[in-house]
Image (cartoon, rainbow, N blue to C red; front, side, top):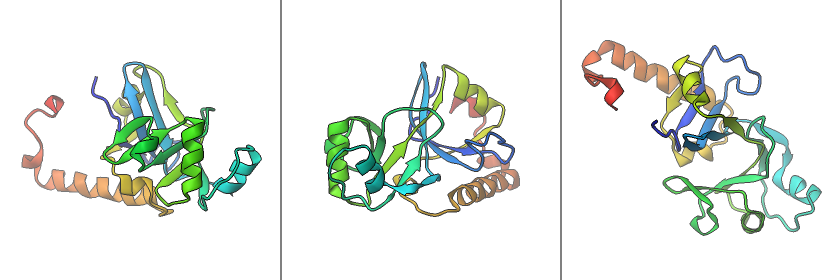
Length: 183
């Protein structure tokens, strides 16, 4: 099984699940036990600071909004660029943290290289692979700049990239490897 960690799942145009319609989901962990991801383009109507105060977690410098990571309940999570507060390396320069002490330190930093998430997206063993095989998702290379994008049209932007790439392949099939299954 090829790990998809660090890649972005882009909901296909046909995706009708209301949790994932028009979403871009960063896969933060993927192995034989399943996958976990965070929706990048679903800001909530509450600031991180307000949510932090409601949780009684102390001081928070963050000005941004809390984000909806997906329909699965779980602890507050953060994607960030601070290696010293990392629990998991997601991709180059991007880390995941769920530890409350590390989250507190990140909340006190108040910089733009931290995104806080309520909930997450989860897949059981082989479930993500099956959804990819049916065309429910398109894969896009992960990039930390996309994680920190505030573009409300992130899904549309990434879908246009996929469409351009597919058009280029259709016009020039020599760009395809002889046996894509060997990638």
